[in-house]
Length: 464
Ligand code: HEC
Image (cartoon, rainbow, N blue to C red; front, side):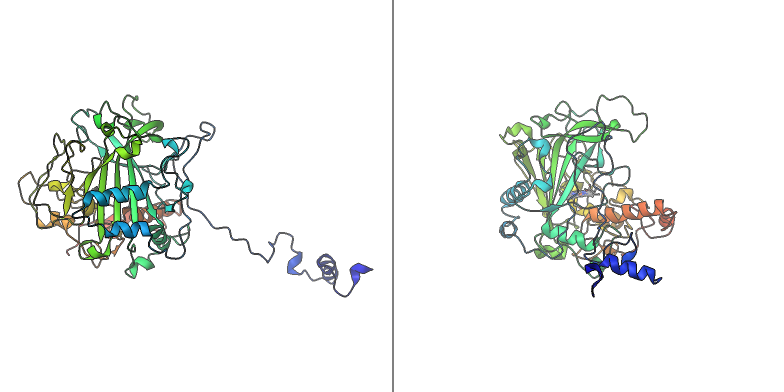
């Protein structure tokens, strides 16, 4: 019989072994084949909030999470940006970064609703930070928008009579994506070792963030000719909606582009942070054929001007106030194109959706783990309130307006710097809070603020 030749088939071999009372491993029916070993990589969730699939059949947000395993080379387009002198040619710099962010991300065949689906980009790859889906402000599923800070009455325009919130999505170029993968080598758990060893974002990392609001041109006149997306937002943030049955109730509503933020990693600035921050506001009155081009520069900053300690804010602006003493920020002086902006504390850079008593670099300098100090002195424990206009701020308040050298944590010696990335910080905080909640208090995180470990708002700011 052919089957009982010198080399039995696997089935015949198994039969023989079974008869001899031995069960070879290969006979166990539920074992996976030894070769090739299938690798099921756990993925990060895409989003946290969305109407049920029975109610919505359209396209959904997909987290771009295949982070490059090897460090990418710096792109020629980024090299060109780094060659521009942002202090002199700030407009050329901001234009170049804007075009870099737009390339391959806009002009979708089906219109703006399909813009910034990163998986459609055939020019270059962009990546999202995971773990922004969790918690009450987590990502929604139309465009991956997270709920952001409040937009108080009058903060966007004198015509604004109702408050709302901003909704935003941020993304990193390949250099940034590689760095995200250092913190998140798998979806199992974060790994701090790269940052602990003093790692950060390499030169040429570009980050962008789009900010939207449910408020339309009736509240904010410069949001005419809007770029509008569907979003799953808090009902309480939609003007004209009845009071929500529960505070966190969400509804599908239109949101309109308000602001775009950018960050460019530049090691020539390492003594004072190592990044250029820039922002644009949407001014539909520019009437550009491509509506995305209605994003006009507000300005850019590369330092916090720590020596300027006098307090000034302009929370409900009727005019943009430029402060010549603030020399590490440049604000667009063209009032024809720039609507009245509140800017940041004492006219440092901030966008319309940002807090008027902070600045881009002030807030982002707190990106560290553990997150010992709050993002703003006013939210810290203990809190340091904004001094009245014209008065000097004390040394505690000014901790938030230092030029912290690159790689140094805000609470030096007590935390590891996350290189100005607040989404990286948020991803760790959210992962710990989630893991704690499903693993019966694995990290006892609810007690951390009583000691001195973590949370957005824990214990006193340690002495420097
Ligand atoms: C009061 C605090 C605060 C201010 C001021 C602020 N940001 Fe942020 N920013 C955040 C937080 C928190 C996040 C992370 C959560 C998110 O993406 O919304 C963030 C995220 C970002 C991101 C995505 C990258 C990241 O993970 O950090 C960019 C880019 C950004 N901000 C740029 C800016 C720019 C430019 C300005 C000034 C025009 C600015 N921010 C002002 C708090 C602030």
